[in-house]
Image (tube, rainbow, N blue to C red; front, top):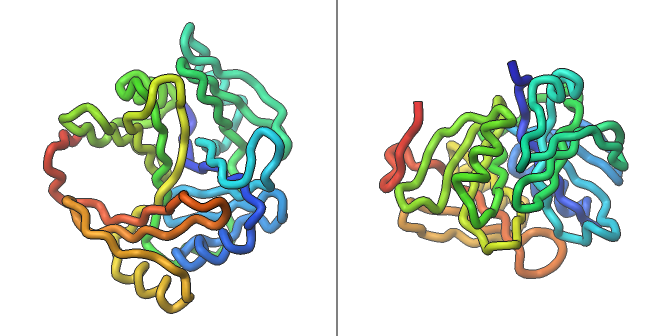
Length: 241
């Protein structure tokens, strides 16, 4: 049996304080408090803030996960001809590195211990995995133990769930695999009000599937954190049991 995974993307940044203010406003709770490696927990899923460095400049986001046992994960998830799963020594310690068929690399780390404080909002982490081969990228995540939840009939997005957190595989450019993350919530109005109270700039956008909040990400201009509330009856999508 594959050990359960927690979705935990990594944001590389020189603006740690601003990210902390934003994520804590959205209900995240600090699980570690090292300026170079801070992990925050949401009601479901986590986000790590890592000091920006040479290969990972300010604003870079990488896909990532946590699990209780790296040994058990390595035993249960073998490499395939297209997907490499191997031990790795990261800057923050022992890890497992996964290299996908299109060249995306990400880490599975030991689970960060949870504190006694619980996240105060019903918010969760939605990692984004961009790939030119959406079905192939989704199948790779299923190999790691994630479960398929929704598939858009246009073939552009497949949503998978881990034990904690969600990953959306979305169509991207060939030869340019990438990652990002968003925040999901069951109470968009409450998130909006908390952002207003904190004085954090954001826009309310009317989408075809409902409203979203767009918050400029701390750091380089042009990147945006999306906050959305799921559609209870998604049109143009097939739900998997």
